[in-house]
Amino acid sequence: MSGISRRRFVAGASAAGAGVALWPGRAMARERALAVSAARAVRVDGTTLEQAATPVGEGAYKRLVAGPGWPVVVRQELCEAGSGRDGRRTGAASFVQFTDLHLTDTESPVRFEYLARFNDSAHRPQETLTVRGASSLVERVNAVRQGPYTGLPFSLVMATGDNTDNHERIELDWYLSVMSGGRITPNSGDLTRYEGVQNSGSGQYWNPGSSLQDAYKAKGLPQIPGLLSGAIRPFDAPGLSVPWYTTVGNHDDSIEGSLPDLGLLGDLYTGSRKVEGCDDATAARLADALLHDPGEAAVLLSRLLTHGGAIRTVTPDERRHPFTPAEFAQAHLDPAYTGAGPVGHGFTKDSVSSGHLYYTFDLADGVLGISLDTTNRAGFADGSLGTAQLNWLESVLEANSGHWYDSDGRVVRGGSGGRLVVVFSHHTSGTMGNLLPDPYRPFEGRHSGTELVALLQRFPNVVAWVNGHTHTNQIIPHGHAVPERAFWEINTASHVDYPHHARIIEIADNQDGTLSLFTTLIESAAPYRTDFADTSDPGLAALYRELAYNDPYATPATRIGTAADHNTELLLTKPTTT
Image 1 (cartoon, rainbow, N blue to C red):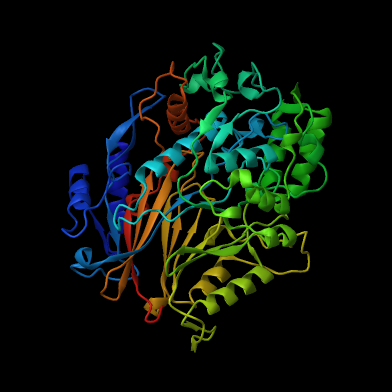
Image 2 (cartoon, rainbow, N blue to C red):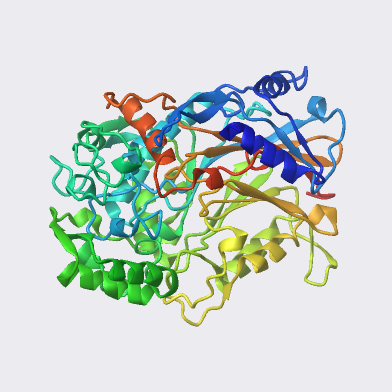
């Protein structure tokens, strides 16, 4: 069974009995998309409704080609679909979600490439190309321009965290330049050469420019002599043509996304000693500590860098220094990065002074966006909310709701009403169990994803919670005995691990007491077919996608999700008073 057929089969099997209607086959999907109603044709061009990357080949290394478009899945777990809605609906909002770009300084001394056999995110063969891959995704958004179903122009792009990988200032500069446009040199240290593990001569890593028979070539990865020189070559990023906003993720907030700032690693970031390997026992101990004891992990890494492990000398670079939350917000306010706007991209001078990286914004006319900070600088990758932020969120929801429900289920009336709400965060409801005290606010309580779901369900005008972090496509219905208290959680895969997706989200009023949330996945503008001799910007972006699929430590079949997590129509009861 082919990969695309298997995904459709699994989706159909899992959806049975859940009120999910499938539209199988490229021809049928396109027919549905192009002729869904006489009033407004659906625009499939540039989306996975039209075509999607598909692996082919019999060998260990799979090539990618343009495969059939993916079906539309109508999901009715929270609300039944009414007939004739295609011809009646009116658009309310159209926007795009980026997530987990992980723009990576692969030459940084504080990286864990030698742990790849224990942790698939420690090293990726494609990671030297993250900046070009993200810029190619921007090109796709600029070309598509509008929602397939509503026809509304995109009001904005929201990047839901882990925009950087190592939490470095230079990576933050790259992210802001990719989003706003400008000249980028995706290289650090000595700008005339590459100084990362992929030219180390170690058989532990993929050495694309060498004929060395390393562990990655043994698994099928090719020799591409021009890849590293092309990867560090300066290029001009076009930047988004629509406004964009940023939500903070754990890799934007903590050292390596999981280590507390214990004063041990800051100077090592900007130094000249880079660990390229260590003994298996130390590697296993460090990998375990990253999951269970961030403090021990920081100590172990410091020891390796100072007097242990296989050390390589690299060119020091002050731009690798980790940034603080205040510096993160301040960088967004830099006029050089305003691009298509708005100034600050959600952050303000108050964000800089307070360190609070959560805010509200107008997503569309009649639709409020709320960006949360679910990170926890106590360590570990997962997150939670502090009490102050949870109370702030409750007050914002009350001010923008015509009515809501108290904790006992009684209706409370007040607020301005009239606005639907979409919540954004990096973490998902299932990855917010990190309740360790925040070292910067040690006496403040922390709150889980379960608590956040319960709060959101008290407000009928909350229609969606959009997030990332898991690097997996998954759409979760949060139902309730009172239909208007239900909402959808929309989790999208990353743009560093295959399948390299972003997601268009549209909100439409069906004029029958229901709302439809349309989700449509998009891929970058890179060509599907690669040429190992082509190191042009489009050629490198194409290699970025194909290498990600072939990462021997990755699990693309898991991360891609099922058809019910891809292109969907999510039905929802319209609040009686919005």
